[in-house]
Length: 145
Image 1 (cartoon, helix red, strand yellow):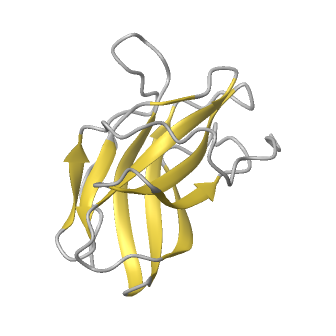
Image 2 (cartoon, rainbow, N blue to C red; image 1 turned 60 degrees about the horizontal axis):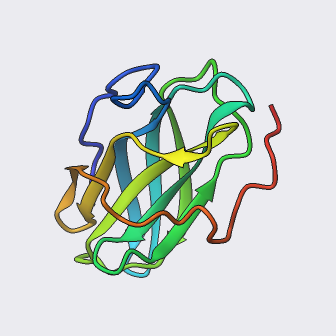
């Protein structure tokens, strides 16, 4: 199973233009083919509901299709980095995927470090060149705090 591979980049990550981002720092996987649980560690520039990481997702690296999305119901201002688990993630051990974060609030966008690879080979930092899936369900219903 894949173990966490990357140390947190920052407790207040931004992209080159200064836009806040959600970095995927690490992924740990448990379970079996077609029924994995992903524990994803995120560093994000959360300030409250106006700026927070609102989901992480698993995307097929070849097709760009959404496989799984873990909605984050609230900001994590005082908990950085943070880890949240989700599943079942229905993939095969050798299936190539990208795990990426999303920032919600007033400026909704992707950005930040993504991890790519497979359960079999592990996950490493990759450039996220996959299409936006911001309108694909499931989507957050709001922010608790």
